[in-house]
Length: 267
Image (tube, rainbow, N blue to C red; front, top):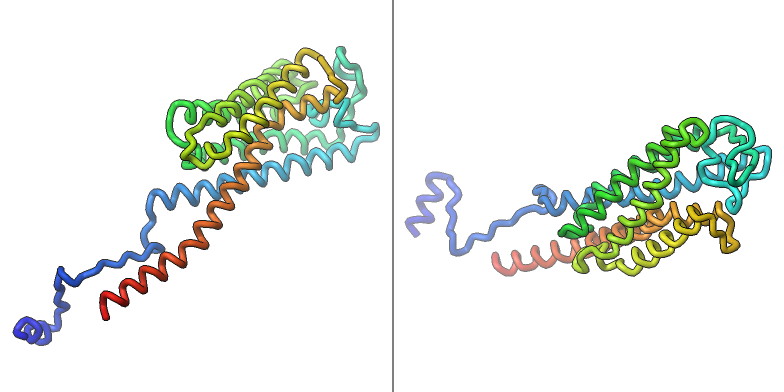
């Protein structure tokens, strides 16, 4: 009673440790894990935007060709060639791409968005040397896409070929390593997708570089070889967004349970 009277006289809040419960507003505290999860959502969005923009730009640029552009017979880089004329001694074909600037910008944008997604989704790759190695190879492949955009095949052929080798070689090795990430991570739970897409892309790359066409067309083989990592990033990006949505649905339930528990303690 004296303690209560003293509190009333001094108008000071009195605390009793045995009955105290500290409540922390989850929205007012930015935890490192929460920041990484939010970064991963942004990275996943970057990967999805990349897939959409790259496909859309290819369709737009190809539609402006006067001569028919075919995905079976034409290379991806044909869309970015600066000059009009016969091209490629091994498979002579007439190439003239009026919107080559847009295509080359899309190549470079793809590299930037792939790299951004690789860095921002770090929380879902898991730990260990394999995960780090996969991310490094993805980063190298991202840089190769930028190189391809800055060095069109008919302007800087050697640099363009180097970029293509890195994309279809290093990028697909990174994809196979992504299939070895820890099972406890989100990407590790999608190992089957990484292995399946990676194996198909590596096989297509081998057939493309050796000019062994099983009937699909070398243009189709190049796309399978080059787009493997992009397809995988689209799959895992959707998984990241689903996981984020699931956490958001569970969060109100946890808050409600905490408030109910606090009400019981104070009543």
